[in-house]
Amino acid sequence: MSDEPVKISNQEGGQGEQTPSSKKPGFAPASADLEIFKLLYEYRFLRREHFSLLTGRNPTSLHYRLKKLAENGYLNDLKIAKQPGQKHIYSLGKPALRSLVEQGIAADKSLLKRLRTHELKPLYLNHEMMIIDFHVMLSLATRGSFLRLVRWEEGRHLYGSVVVKGEKLLVTPDAFFTLEDSRRPAGRNQADFFLEADRTTETWPKQFQNKVRTYWCYLQDGPHEKQFNEEKITITNFRVLTLTISHKRAEILSDKTHKLVPEGRKHYLFSSLENFSLENPAPILEAVYLRPGAEIRHPLIPPPQPSQVESSVL
Image (cartoon, rainbow, N blue to C red; front, top):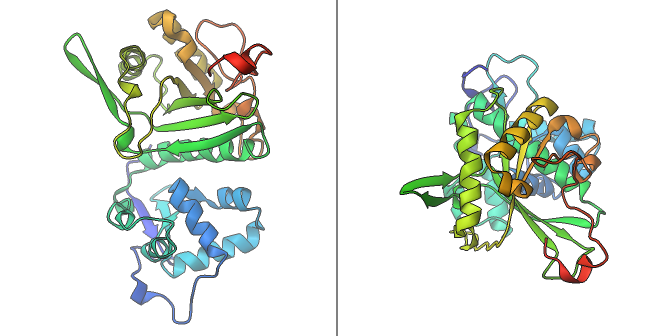
């Protein structure tokens, strides 16, 4: 993987971020563009196919509109240097973010906390796009489903820690999300997950071993029950979902996790991007997840038994 910087273009052949004063005369965003801005505010980075699937808009006309918005500074077009064929990845430009603030969709602090996209490296961006692909697929798969994605969080406010034998261990998830199951009664119908996106090819890296142990101690000792710093999220239980790039990798990590924390195996799930896709996201809710020590694959949320509808907690 190249470590060349990501280049940002707002015009064809041009780099660097445009200021509002350099926008083409007479251009103004349309009301339909607000949906594009809102999606980027939610997902941070998106490719053209993401926009098309999430909005249902025609890919050709959508491509033209994204290009115009980028030319006029409302979107940043991220390109990885020296990687031919790299798909366009878009992020919010300052004028679009200001529009969201004016509409009351984004807070003023968003302007101060805006991601410094000019410093992105390909390794980080590829990792981030893996997370975003999963987020988009989960959003698409839960449309019209008995499961609903009610929360998705990313950022440092999710980070936590636990002290084990005098050593402070850090919990640094890639994302946190909550699914709500309409098949279960209110108050017993939500399941919380920490997401780990794993792109490495190492068989059993020390870093991942530490993650497995830390999550188990974090769950056992209870600091996760405290509210996250900014978002006021409280959870009492959780699963750790690790997403890999291959079936084989998911199998290896699942097997190793079973040997490392056999008593906590039900709290870990493993799957790979080979099980679902943007074109076919539905399997993301089906039995495509490995649980350490189990011979069969499990769905993300198991169907309730008749007796569980009234009595069980996810």
